[in-house]
Image 1 (cartoon, chains in turn brown, red):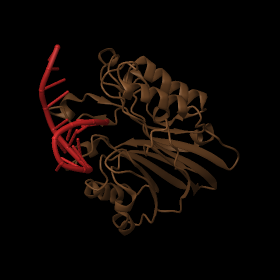
Image 2: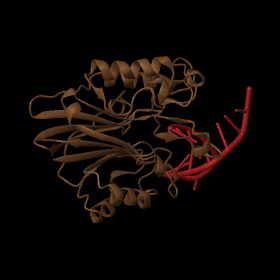
Image 3: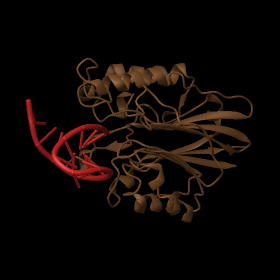
Image 4: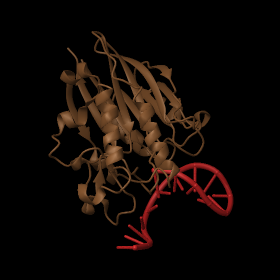
Length: 268
DNA sequence: ATGGTAGGACGCCTA
């Protein structure tokens, strides 16, 4: 039985509905996890998703900033909308969904970007990002014979050398500083998570999911970063059948600066 | 060394 889950930082779900529709019609993932929806829950474009066959929607939004949503063609149950750092930000929602005889727990995350200055003393946003990572250690890859856990989202950190266009030039740039990359790897390894994108694409190969809006030509300069991630508990690794990073979506009409990442599973 | 673009909400913050 195939099962697909996609993650996409959409940078305003209302503004992006045309390309979200294109994506869902062309790729038909079972579940789509969105981040940066920038939309209060009572204004979420539920009807647009229903028309496309996505009748099950779990939202944790707020006005203006942040916001996550998990959208599915099969029932999802909300488990938790967790608050981090006592900030009141909408940056997480977890749900359960059935797939291939497994009960999947699915965490959808939007980790703080952290501002420009990578100094926790001088920049409270960077301090908040590091504190958020500390709290993320509590989210672990639980599993047993008939359940598993998946964590997706915009984690706003590119942990490996080939997750950025220039490791050397990025070492003091927020998203690739050692304190962040080591912090994220600590969350992942201590939590028992497998990095599914890097199970499929070797660490020696460049892999990006985000390209700045500020480049003259994002495609030619290609100064990307892998900020979006798909992790799972170890018992799902053998069921992973593929990872697709939709680089083309960066060139769609009125694009997000992030592209969708799709993980495909083949359950027996 | 700097500035470049985009979104939400309406002058300015965030990414």
